[in-house]
Length: 154
Image (tube, rainbow, N blue to C red):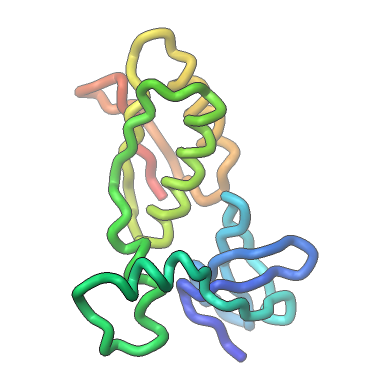
């Protein structure tokens, strides 16, 4: 059975993921634990959409007539295009950055802004180190107008 972008799946031996792209030859690009991974259809099984996402979209006043396929993309499509990491520890910032980037990718953002501040440089260094590890990040650079912001290209 073919999967569509936004579908929740289980990748054999790895765990739960979300389909980002359908590629040629029965291959899929999925977001798995903060990483973009290409897998074959034979490695995937469908899983039910998380209940929290269903509840959030069901409680809204809009929509409802689009059917079962509509709720999955509607939640991440409202993902913000920037995150402010001020006041977080390095560990908290890395975890929040991963979640933010996953949501941004699912929402289809091509570019996002990460506000880490200028003083001390710990958060900035940690953010840049984490961005270098993520295959879904095409590039990043410090904003010339504000060196406390990194612009990330997805």
